[in-house]
Amino acid sequence: MNTVKIFEKIGLNKKETAIYLATLELGVSTASQITKKTGLHRTYFYDLVKELIQNGFIKQSKSGSKTYFVAESPDKILMMEEQKIAELKKAIPELNAINNQKEEKPKVYYYEGIKGIDEINNETLRIKDSELVAFTTPRFVTTKEQTVSDDYIKRRKVAGKKVRVIGEMSNEILELKKRDKNELRETRILPRDIFHSEIEIGVGGDKVYIVNYKDEFGMIIEDKEIARVQKQIFEIVWNSGKIIKT
Image 1 (cartoon, one colour):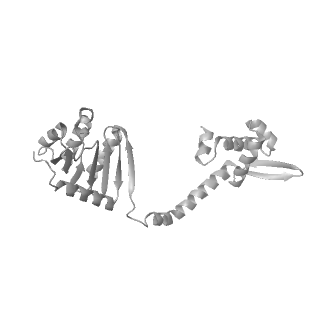
Image 2 (tube, rainbow, N blue to C red):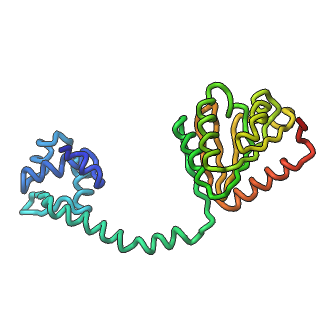
Image 3 (tube, rainbow, N blue to C red):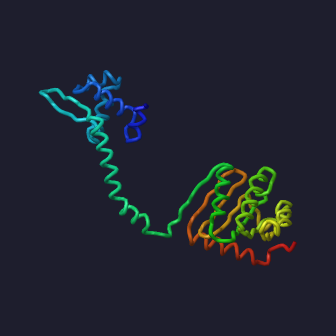
């Protein structure tokens, strides 16, 4: 059992833990006895033991001119921690009320690596809306990302979730468009001098998702107003006169 790690989890650092354990072993002891056992300099000892006394791990007493220290029993430490948890439980309703005061506050989730991108894709399939919309990137279907994109498209088809995408004029997006009917997708293309993107930005329900396939990271922003405006921007571009007829 790693005692040091146990005490670190309840807020003590390694030096504080060393003092507590040494005092527990020595019983009623002086500063010199404790510092000798722990190897700590007395200057550091007094700063650290002050915190331990304030937090209830060690008690201090005097006899004549001497100061003595004694460790609280492990059972008492356990009772102290259980009391903290009990007090936190009592405060949960009030804390939840504070947390829910502003229902519209955005939530942001960050993801890294191919597994992170895959989790973003999974999250888009959990969105209740039957349709997703996205400004896409040629990187979605390049060789490096082919396995990820193919797997996602298959799962999206099984889920019956349609998607509308806007991409730049490129061989990759043209090839993607050819498969639209089979892959429950409608693709529109913009001239590359108007639109070029290395990332994908999509909207579904109250969520906006952003994926950087090149650097392999992404995020999901959950917020009604942000999603509404992003969807509005998409629709403006979707219905603009800049779309290339292919």
